[in-house]
Structures are given as structure tokens and as C-alpha cells.
Length: 499
Image (cartoon, rainbow, N blue to C red; front, side, top):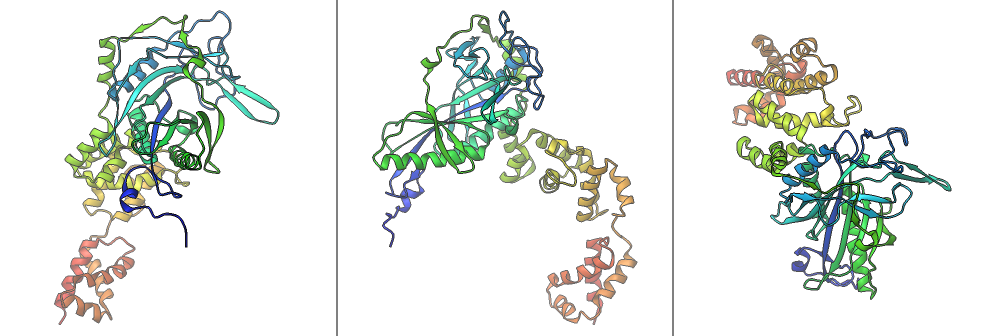
């Protein structure tokens, strides 16, 4: 028999991590830092247009490569997007802010320092409320420039691409309010939705537009906080969750073995599902912050804030509540429809045009979403599908009016997406219109009844579902085009007439 202690059900049901060795419950203390690339045309302090995938070092200038004598100039659009995000998150935007120099030395940082914000960031406070009602509070969000990219996979040499140097970022820092990998995933999902809805960022993690760092420690309930470690540069929410789960287990094992945790920075190995030490963790004084002398402090007045507040759309949480209230949709469908603004906007327009919001939701979630990633169609995301809400409304109308069947609607929708041709033209060309000819349908029904005495007897005995066994042969005979309701009505009438 195993000597592993049994974990009481009550303890296991409480939040936290239950040690598989001792059965003791530990609590995670987690803070999240997210670096988000803002969707500006140019960099933060110069006029270079950033493009992902451009040839190395092809979009640089004297400013972003730190040539002597150059001066940075703040990108007003970057500040506007940053303030818009802050307001959407319920943060406080003070009237005065400034930039600072954060010093560290690495080959991808040409100046030897990063222009960031230290003691006077452009916003503080705010947060996101989880489904449980718990709020993950934000400490601050600050503006900063990105570094370049160091490439270490060339044998004994390191290559440096400075295309990213100077790209505008906002870094959001939460309080240590997160208690589990699940809460971290929920928070990050909600943050990403808000960033995309406000137009601040596309948040494409494969392009490095959203990167996450996790600060994590564990303690027993009621104990003071213990030493934290930081896991850097997590480029997917799945990796964030896996890194948290691994670190919780690792730290608990160290403590229960009599060891201690060192404050350090670690990296996550997604292939092995483990973290490994990278370097000792720096403190603020290690960066030798001081005010950026080349950029004056700046004011964010009420007029500027009011303008940004005015362009914030209805956010995902509010839309979910409204969809449930106005359209009678379930929580799962509401969440799926609002996960991307492009999907939500498409749904609302299609629901209005078709006057059948539940049908619009079903077609989008079950058919249009299936087009994304389909090798035959080649669409990488929903926004690439060349369909308009009017197109979907037409398909819904044809199906609801009985002009075509649901299967025909699927065929029609894919053909419209693939060819760009109109619904009316394709219905005729693909011969999708249902057969409404009652004489033809009656002939197919009479043929289907031949030799089906048992089914006839069941229907006459008050078992209407037995009719389903006859629908298939009729539909097959009609090439799938017979109107199913007329078929069912005709079968029932013919059976009722039999002795």
C-alpha cells in the first residue's frame, strides 16, 4: 500500500495547492506583468514604421540605433492608445507623468539604457473582475520602448536585429492577487479582449505583441509571504498556466524537503514543462533609474482623457450581459461571440439584419468559426473570411423560409466565402433549392412506405418518432432536396389513410 497521506475532501476543495507528499495545503501568491506592443504605425520615439518580418535591421534610424546627438520625440498616438487602455481598465490617469532611464547592458539595447517609466507612470490602479467576483488589481501601467532581438542559434556567434528597438510597449503590473493558474488564464484572457476591443493592440503572441512574466511564491495559509521567483517571457497563456503549475509544485517540494527558495529569474522550457534558473533577480536600484533628460515631463489633461474615453467601445463583459439579456443566449455562446471584437461586431449586424439572433449565433459559432484554419479556404483568423453580415443574413433567411435545407445552407455559405458570389446566384447554380412539389414528394413517400408495415403499425399505435425511419429513404430519393416538413406531413397523411 502507498504511504502517501490521504487528503481530506474539505482541504482538497479549498483553493491552493495540496502537497502530494504531505497532504498539506499551500497558497500561491502570483503577480502578472504583461508587455503589450501598441498598434501604432511608427515607433515610440522616432518615425520608423515597424513591420513584423521585415529584413533584419532594415527599419532603423539614428534615433532607434542610439547614434550620438539624436533626440527622442514622443509618439502622440502611442500615448493616446495607452491612456485609452488605462481608462478601459478603470485606472487613474494623473495629469503629470515623465519618462526615466532604466540602465542595463545587453547586446540588443544599443543605448545601454531603456526609456521607460519609474516613479511617475501614466496610470495607476484599476483592474479586472473575474467571473468569481474577485478583482485582480492593477498596480500600474507604464509606457516604454522595446529592445532589439538577439539571435543565439548561430553556433558561436550572436546576431542582433534592431528592427524592434523603439517599438512602443505598455507594461501592466498586477498586485499579487492571483491565486491559481486558472485565475491567471482568466485574467489574461480578459485583458487581451480589452486590448483588442480598444484597438490598442492585436495581441498576436506569435509575433511578440503580448508577452507575460509571472512572479510567484507559495506559503501556508496564514503565513507571511515567502521569497518569490520571476518566470520571464512566456509567449502563450498555456505556457503561463503550465509554468505556474510547475513552480507551485517545485517550490512546495523545496520547502517540504527543508530547502529554501532563492529570489531569481527563471525561464520556462515548454518541451519539458519545467522552469530553469536564468539569473539572480534584479532590484529597482540595480537599474539606476533617473529622469530622462531628453524628454520633458508631460501633461495628460482632462480634454485628452475625455476624447479617449469617448472612443472606447462597449467592452466584452458588458456585451456578454447584454447578449444574454436581449437575445436570450447562454453564457457559453455569449463568451464565444465576444472573445474577439470582429466576431461580436459581425454577430450584432447579422442578428439585426436576419432578425434571428440565435440562428446568427449558431451559424457563426458552428460554421463560420470552422472556416478558420480550414486548409481548403486558408483563412488564418475570423477577420479574413470574405463574408459580410448581409451574406449570413441571406443564408439564414433561405434556411428559415424553407427555400434550402440546413445542409444546403452550409454548402452555400462555404461557396460564398470561397467564390465571393451572391447567395441568389449560387442557390441556382448549385441547385440547392428545396423541392416543394407536393406531387413529387408524395410519389417518393409512397415508394418509401412499400414493405414498411412495422413502421406503419408503430405510427398508427401513437409512436410518431417512428416516421424518422422513413425520412431517410425519401430524402435519398429526392437527392436531399425535398422539404423535410412537407415530407413528414405527407408521410403522416398517407399512413393515416391506410386501413
